Image 1 (spheres, rainbow, N blue to C red):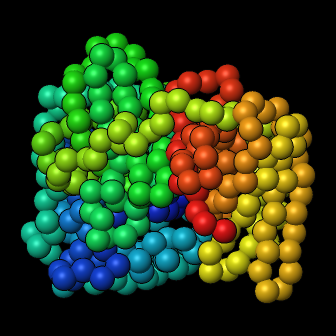
Image 2 (cartoon, rainbow, N blue to C red):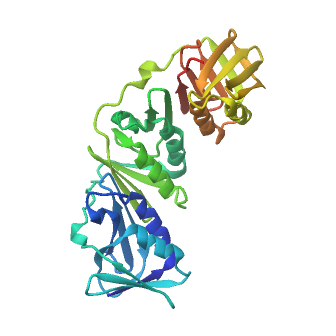
Image 3 (cartoon, rainbow, N blue to C red):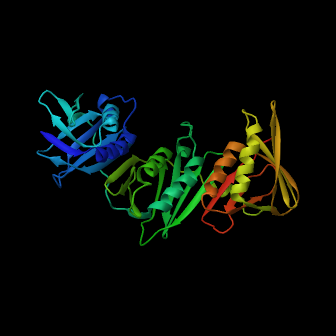
Length: 370
């Protein structure tokens, strides 16, 4: 049994699929990629990787002389293909359970594991299918996932809350210190649905599809799983069970002070001053005056401060933030918002950040004691 395909096509497909492969799995077969011939057409080879939390499958065009169904070690297979000459590669399957990877003057041999030991990906019904703008959704992932918790003790908060209603999709993430909320308008009719999608799932999805040429991405939801489809790739993931906290209760509704700034110059100033912030607390302080904002930070090795021009309303104020959290927020706006507005009340209450010319995205950040 032989399979022949282009090395570059195989490399791209393997690179996509191995994102889901377990680094250290309870089952040895989870370190492998499942390869099988596409049942609908003998011209395609399907690769699947999973760690039981997420699964990725992708297809590539290949010449197959008969059906194939086996698994190969993902890491070693990709290392071989990544260094393979830019030519056709042939996989020749032996009766002893090995596979030969053949080039014009090159041969590798890999051991397989039985495909029957490879866990099946969950079957996700396409009852609730939502069509997403691929570029907008990828941007929304970048704008929200940074605010999700990375501490597994806060399982609910390690996900992004997704709510779909009345043609709108709202994504929200918080770790208790910052909150990010992005709203998207959907094309066509969309079902009403709510889900908590793991942060890792969305980050892997963004890496998987961000260079795809098509404009849309399909998302299907069930009670326990989500499935994303783009071109010849499918990502399946478990959802996080539970009820997401009502973040609307902590969003301030009125503000005593407002500040308008240019996004990128402000970000650059914060990044410069943050060099001198404490490595333990990362504190930067703002002294807000009429027409100016002085950013300052200091630790044992020295201090720094920089003044930036602003437009403001309200009384003077001094407030401090974790510089790392603040920089992450500002970087999301630096993508396409030339000016931002900071809305705040006091030095102990959260600040709300939004773009001046858009109302579909906001971030909230808790201050800290200097």
